[in-house]
Length: 115
Length: 137
Image 1: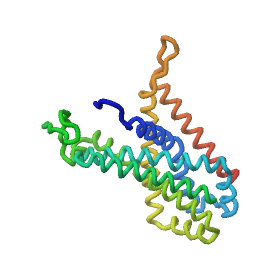
Image 2: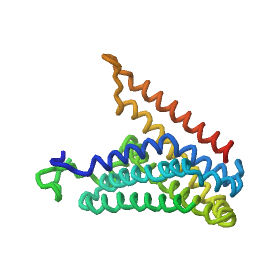
Image 3: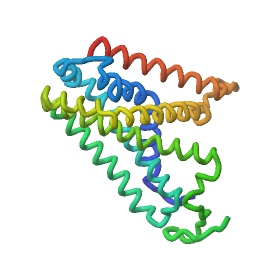
């Protein structure tokens, strides 16, 4: 129970959105990029991949795909650590993991922007 | 179960659990696995971001990165990560039916039906990504 206004709902909304993106889209991408392409089941040339990723709509899609689940991770990992007993470090843990997700978001923007 | 005061908010109490409480029951363990799935998903997405970055650096850098992903260690990681990702999808979409209450007038759509809709959406989304990748990639 909390009293007064907190920023918690903001992080929770990002957690929920990231969880949905991860649930709907991550397994198929994991299969494609983690297994199918490296193992040669699907072979794609560098130029075609680059042309695909350079499209603005694909960039927006990749941004959503990569950045949102990072907040999902931050939220869950934060509570894993609290659940195994690190209550005393509540605030530093929250700052560290949500901060990491923000850094990840910036890195995603940077990588996609440069293509 | 003992309780101790919370340092940051005096007056509030929370149960003090041992560090290994989640090993005591299969359900607790399943909960921890579900939470842990987010770590594997996040690592995969960081790898994907690095892959996109290598793609932009040129054909050699991209080929070298794919070569690295072919190593047994990375293949094992991706197989394990895929299992965790599927576990996340199944638990998340099942819960979607419980979390999202849909009412049509007096009638409340059964949670199982909403979950079923979410699973159909998952299948459609996966198929669209797969076909797009195969046809346009």
